Length: 252
Image (cartoon, rainbow, N blue to C red):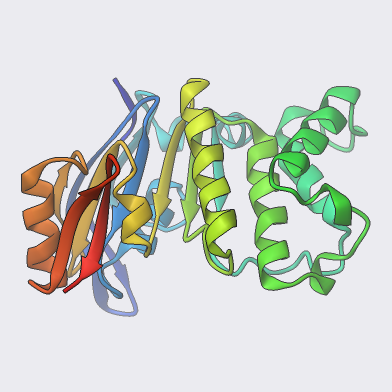
C-alpha cells in the first residue's frame, strides 16, 4: 500500500527545471529516506509532495488527489518539518509545539486536555520539555531543532515529511531521532526524511536516491543494487559495509 504517490513532470522556478520526470511511491508504515548530492532536488521534491511547491503533475495522498483534501484534514493527515523555519522566534517553546495541534481543534478554540497531553508527550520524547517556557529565539540550534521536531510529532499525523531534521543535532540526539522514527513506524505511521547523513539513511526501510533533479534509484538500503547506485552517484571512494548488523557508508 502507498502512503503517497506522485508523478511530477517538472518543478520550474525562475526559468530553471529543478526536478523533472519524477515517479515516486512512498510505502505505508515505513520510513523512507531521500538522499543525494547537494542540488539534487531533494528538498524541492519534498516540498512538492507536501503541496508547498507548485509542480506540473499529480500527487495522491492516501489514494486521493492532494488538491481535493480540505486544508484542515490534510494538515491532520500530513505533518511537515522544513529547514530553517522562521516566524516563531518570539513564541515560547511550548506555544510553538502547540501549533502542531491546531488542525485538531475548531478555529480559535482553546487547547483541550488531549492537546496539552500530546504536546507534553512530544516535548518529553525530544527532551525539550525543560525549556518549554523559553522563547524559541533564545535556544541553541540543537535545542530549537528538538522543539520543532516536537511540534511535528504533536500533530500525530499518519504521514510525516521532514527536510534535514538532523541539522544541528549531535550524534546522541541523532540516534534518539532515529529511535523516535522507528517508534512512529512501529505504531503504524509513515515517515519521509531528506537526509545528508548516509550512515543513518541506510537504516531506513526504503531509500530514494536523487541526482540532477531526477530519481535514479529506489530500493532497500540492504540491497546490493542500492549500494552500487550510491557509489555511482557519490563516487567510487564511498565504501558501504555492514558492521554489527547495520549498513554504514565510509570514505575510502
